[in-house]
Length: 158
Image 1 (cartoon, helix red, strand yellow):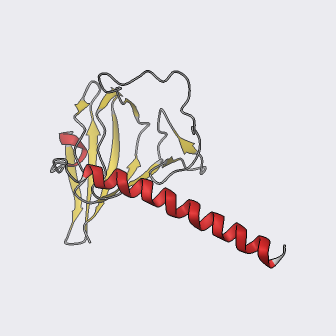
Image 2 (cartoon, one colour):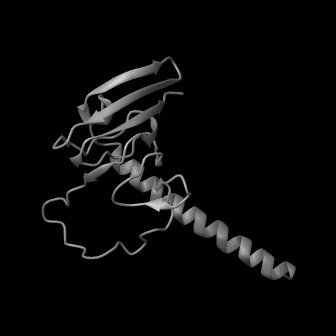
Image 3 (tube, helix red, strand yellow):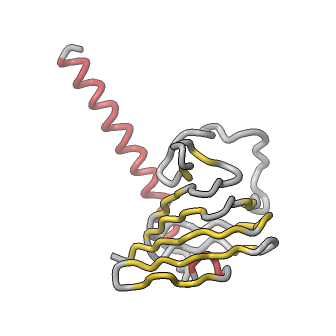
């Protein structure tokens, strides 16, 4: 590859990353005006396993039929690990247009993608071991639990 082609490839990649970062930053900034989530897992039954000034690890047990209210912003950076298969529905907001079929970018890895143990991007049911990261101030979803499951919430305070 010539120097000019390499420079063009690096420039295009950098610009694309910068634009993706701006889009992602706007998503987080929009959430900043929302109420802060003070109870991890939207008040689902939880047990704090570890807590200190840097981290809090909680085991959330979502019962079947539980509805987690969303629309709040996360108090800390969170890593969520599914202990059991996560089977839940995120309802479409009232008035939102129907989007039949898979999302346009289904299966593509993004900043908050759920990743299975084999490295694949997960949508729908989350198998045990699936991991997702959500940044501080990002928006929590409304969730309706279809089948009881547990997940670990690792909140990074500092």
